[in-house]
Length: 216
Length: 91
Image 1 (cartoon, rainbow over the protein chains, first blue to last red):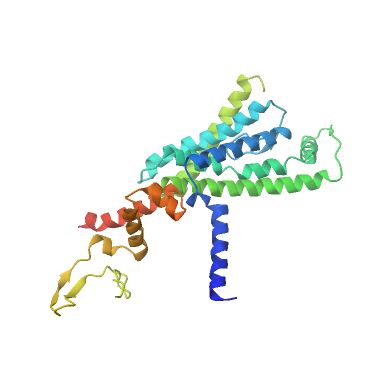
Image 2: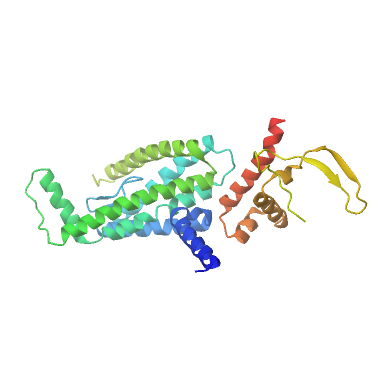
């Protein structure tokens, strides 16, 4: 392999890594907001097919059946909570000017791993095995009959969901750092604080929505 | 012509100009002259400033040409501004 080929290969590897973990170097703004919203709504729709609720900024749970609008509301609440809290954090931490559309757009696209989570949790076996485990944990007689492949679907779904949450947190941090020009300890500290606040706010908002609309 | 270095390769401090000469008549001027603010920037940052001026100061145009996002280009500009302002704030 020549030096030039080696350099090109290294560049391609670096670019793939950047696209996976920091795409916001290359894309932000209105287009990203639109793309992120579409992906979020598709994730919610796929989630509704298997009763997968994104019921918090960092939450993925198999839950009760609900109308489609409730699944769509959950992802929008998650996104609004984290975007608004990070916007407020940036007002205190960032020394640069920033555009609101970049924060909301990049945070929307940072939720793309949930699309893969929704796909991974689509097989009915995941839900059946989750219900079975829950019954066992509560020392009740399982009401669902599980099939041989259900455990495999459950393990694959659970591993993918955990990896997707980790990937999403990395993307959310990168989105915050790029769109608000924050760096170092201040950026990490403010991001963690914002994430905790947004998680609490989103849980409360989704719970209130479920109560007020009679779904709980 | 060689590129003008702005940082000392031995101790990484800011370099100054000590000697200037005229290529036409060989007149030489010795003294201690500060590098202008833009010359103190790294070669990469100087290239960024040149492109910024060529784009009439449009960050959107810069982002389009460099295939980078708007906030990334704006962050680069903020970093350049910070470097230019740093000696002013010290002085």
